[in-house]
Amino acid sequence: MSSVKPPISSFRELKLDGRRLATLTAYDYPTARLLDGCGLDFLLVGDSLGMVVLGHPDTTQVTMADMIHHTKAVALGAKYTPVISDMPAGSCVSPATALENARQLCSSGADAVKIEGGCDLLPAIKAILSDGIPVIGHLGMLPQQVVQEGGYHIKGRNAPEADRLLADAVALDKAGVGAIVLELVHPPIAEAISATLSCPTIGIGSGDRCDGNILVLHDLIGLFPWFRPKFAKPRADVAAEICRAVREFVEDSKG
Image (cartoon, rainbow, N blue to C red; front, side, top):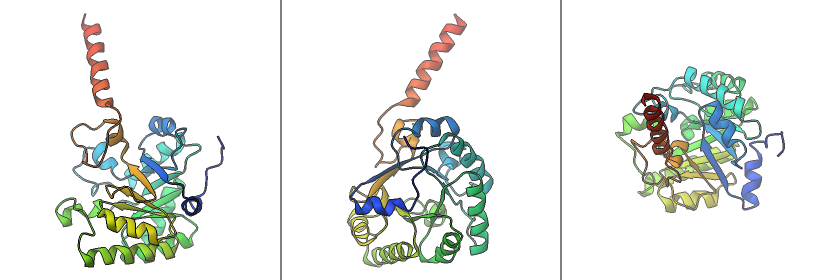
């Protein structure tokens, strides 16, 4: 395995070659180290840590300090796999603020940042890209807006919404983002967007016609049993194994 991480710009080349992307979230050193040799295209330090690590009801309470803390831990464990960190809610209120926050995440070990939003965030995205920091886009359901929107809803089911998603995706693609996450996008619209762009799309709950997939690790391995999205297929039951091991330890210890 090469000790040189592939550049984020190579994602576009992978799409040209017809090679799909696979990625998962990571929030700490041991997890990142375990995932580092599994063939993933990048590890996302997602602001989903607000829910599956910190116990918040959504991502909106995650701070830059939280993201910096967890990015440092993941970066220590990921020697071969690019690390991408979410820009949390409130971190892109202006292009200058967004650039400063992106620089902090990169100084903490991130190889790129991910930003939720479309044309409204273009000035911030362009400022970050102009500084030489790669950006991953995020369209569709935007978890940082879940409170305003009153829940998690599939996007693109009506023509105006679908047209807006496509326009946002094209604008981000032209700006030079490395890839775009499509979350809870109506599958036919996700497919149409994927066919239009030069950069790859990475789907989560958006059907199987995107250029790759991303999941929260806890949903994949059954480490957060209190809630699991309908689209996530668990491939292990780590929570049950933890409880079994602990109960066995308690029984042995108490005699």
